[in-house]
Image (cartoon, rainbow, N blue to C red; front, side):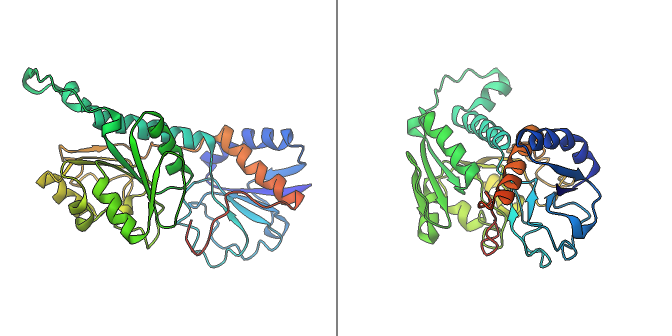
Length: 309
C-alpha cells in the first residue's frame, strides 16, 4: 500500500476525497489517502500552494508533489522542494477556460455591449466584421493557450500566438522572442493574456506594450494579474488606446473595493472564474501520475524549475 497525503484546505478535502478514492480504485491502486500521515511515510503529496505545508524537508520518501492548481508560482521557488513537481492540466479546467475566452472574444468582436446597453435607444445598424477579418493574438501558448487558439481558429478568426520559446500549432501564426512580441502586439486587435506568472512575464502589458497595439484594441486577461501594469492600463483605457479590458485575475484578490478598475466604464471584472479545477476530472489526472510513479514511467505535466512553470 502507498500513502497519499492530501495537503490542501479542508474545503478542498470535502470536494476531492470521494473523486480521488474512486479514481484510485478504478486504477487498481491500493492507497491510504488521508490528510494526516507521518511525513516519513508519505509517498505522494496532493497539494495546493495555500496549504500549511511549506517545508518539504521531512518528506524523505515522497516521490512527487502533485499540484491541484494550474499555477505554480507560489510553490516553484520553495527551496525545500527537491522532488518532481507536477502542475494541474485538467480537461475540465481547460474546457472552462476555452468557453470563457471564446465568450468574451465574441462579445468584443461582435460589439455586443452596445446592443445590450442600447444607450439612448440608438438605432445604429453597423454590422461587425467577420471573424476572418479580426486579428486575435494569444499571449502564452501553453496547454490553455493552445486550446483557446484551436477554438478561435475553428470560429474563423485570424489567430496568432506569442510565447517566449518557439511553438508550432496548426492554423496559428506562432511568434516568439522579443521581435515576435513586437509583431504580436502590433497585430492584437483582441489580445488574450494566458502567460504564466514569472519574473520574465511581469508587466508584459505595460505602457510601451499598449502603445504598440492597434488603437481601440481589446484586452482579455484570464491568465495572471501581474501580467498587466494596472496604472498603464487605466491610462490606455482613458486615452482610448485600449477600448475595453475584461479581467478575471488581479494582483490582489479579491480585488480591493477602492481599486479604480471597479469604477471604470471600460473595464469588466469577473471574480477569477474563467477556469476552475473540477474535482472529478482533476482526480484522474492526479491518479494517473501516481500510477506512472509506481510503474516507473515519466510523470506528466512536470514543472520546469528554471522556467518557473
